[in-house]
Length: 129
Image (cartoon, rainbow, N blue to C red; front, side, top):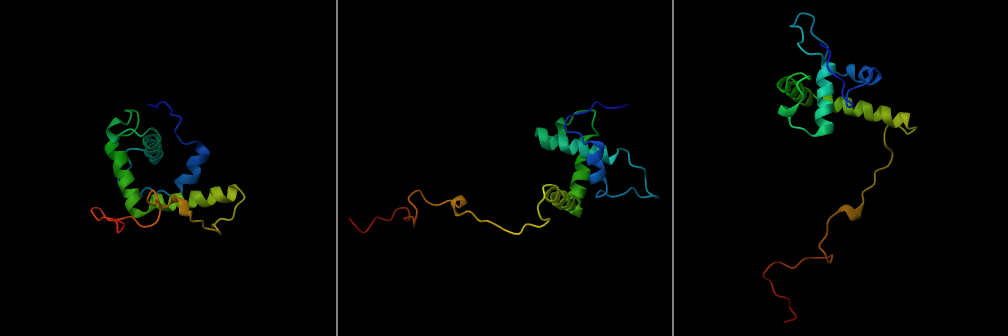
């Protein structure tokens, strides 16, 4: 039975880019019950909608299977490698160098006290009394 498509589903071109980073099926092992594309589509749905694992729609694989693959990919570095590779591809597609050449630290993003400078300790009176 074919499930209905969601707007978070991968296109064929997107799946071709991602598929090469996912582990291949073992030739002598048990056949996978759910296609990895459906697992990945479920992860994208979860990420975009923010729903809980147990509220994953019924036409996706069971949430326990999706969560199991997510944990496996997180721990073995698959998601990190995928993120880095797609980030590099995106930079090149935008006409940038594959690796950043400049880093910027904004001092305004560091939280300071309201008045700036040092903050008096609680319960300590000033020397002007």
